[in-house]
View 1 (cartoon, rainbow, N blue to C red):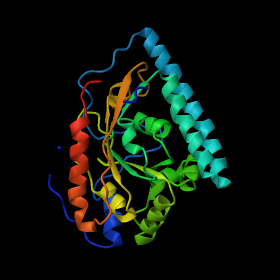
View 2 (view 1 turned 180 degrees about the vertical axis):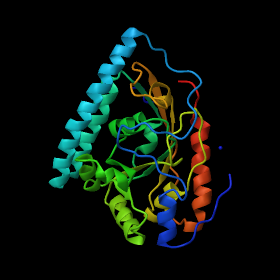
View 3 (view 1 turned 90 degrees about the vertical axis):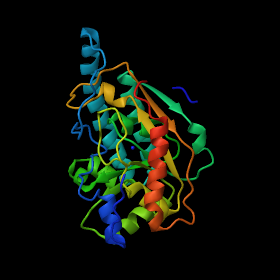
Length: 286
């Protein structure tokens, strides 16, 4: 590991408007914690190279990753049941690192120093692959958590662990109560990772950001930190059932944007700044 593109539709005010924004409006949110592979864009024009050895490695690595996910989900559920939030973080970190290691993925991280000194933060990124989640879980400092759809709660063990370990579960029917709960969780000391495009995209470009991440940052008063993710869609692209191992992805962390003094009316401008910062460091080749 190396350390080293819009029109804004103004949503209604109030908790219901916030809930609608976080839920993605008319768009369906991606599922952020399981290893399904539905995406909403065309695939890469070129795929990562795959020979017989590489294919065999990929099949074995994928099987071991699923098995490791099951093991870690049980551990995380037990930790959540015992209210051991930091233990859940350690298990989740081991989960991400284990998958990345067995798949032989090299994760390059630039700008990690921009997170130094931040007690908590809202990390705002583009989204290409489930490996984005693995890498954030493995290498982001602090207590990283994610925004997820309530449908994930139906997954045995994983759903329980997510609901009771500080992840933000989006429920459109819960209204302001769910928003207040989300802000309370964020202010408790966790660090939130938000994939602001609302879906995973595999066409190797950054798409328009939704305003949910900016809402969260403004309401919580936490700094919003832009981060571009490049390359991860190459080795686990649209329709893939098996990972292509031995590849590289890059995460570039930008400078934090302070949200103190911002109001809800500033969410569009903040979203624009975050998206531009991600586009500035995103690269089509790693």
